Amino acid sequence: MTDQAETGGTMTERVTDVMEKIRPLLQADGGDIELVSVDEECGVVSVRLQGACRGCPSAAMTLKMGVERHLKEQIPEVKELVNVP
Image (cartoon, rainbow, N blue to C red; front, side):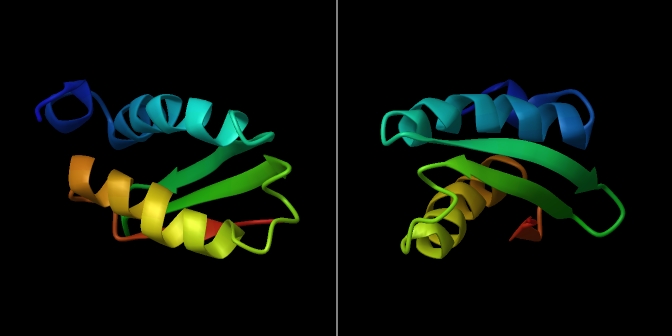
């Protein structure tokens, strides 16, 4: 699957594009995700979970196995996704 996230724009723009595609899945469960920052030098994306996702016991799994995995597939420069308070 090729989309704009893989082919153009800054890393921050590509991360934003991918997150906009993921956001409806989180919102369907009463949560949301906010992009805090993208460190293009080291490939670290910082996000903040909101709503139901914030206190969910499965939040860490959702971030690592869902959001991070999807970001890494679409944007190879992404090395890690971290949740910030």
